[in-house]
Image (cartoon, rainbow over all chains, first blue to last red; front, side, top):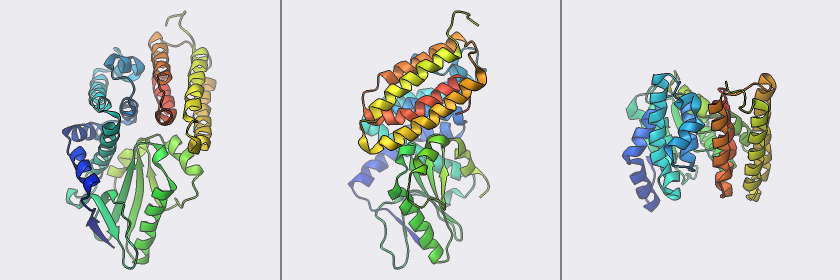
Length: 223
Length: 102
């Protein structure tokens, strides 16, 4: 098993520009240091409806209300502000920015558990005698003896059989080579929605860790 | 607590009715019909649990405003793909406004 940079085609070049947007780093930094309720606030705002700040303040009284503890309200205001910046991007760009934020968030949480220089982005995984997949993995942890591969999705709807098959194939091929590859799908959506999506899937999912919004911090835990 | 403000029961009726309208919009994406049925059933079950546990308790005016604001947001949606995104998000927003875990 070996890792390789994804091809630098036109899509990759454009997406690299999105990933390098300072807004992505700021949003990921805030989301890495907050809790599930704040992440739901971010998800709702970044879904893209109203860009009026007061509309969202009124919709989240338990985070942004006048009688909420100062530190919680201050944190929620920061999350709201950065999420509004994302929401104000046009539809197509917003979707890419959101994807890049979830990937960066994943990388930042992983960096609390594994050395930062083992975390890579947009990498393909190659196996002897197996035709390589074109689609790169969003985030990988490349360590001898305990590698990890992550795909990241904005919503539960992004859990598709294609994605599950690719992750399971990678895990299986690694095992065939006697290598360890932990595969996971990070979904910035509720566990309940992910479970619904998975329930009807016919793809193999037993060996794939689903990391819903409520469990993101587990990526930073001991592994 | 404002005694004239709507209680939980009547507000949740508005929430579920709006959620139904959102689901109808999402159903325009034929391939996702089954997912939408399953998803809405799962979240309505969770909302019903909250309603059953708390009864028709009075709500703070800001909670009613929050939920009516969320309903107003989803009623503005015209794109069925975005509606499907909100079929997962709207119940989470509702539950957080009520001080409940999604």
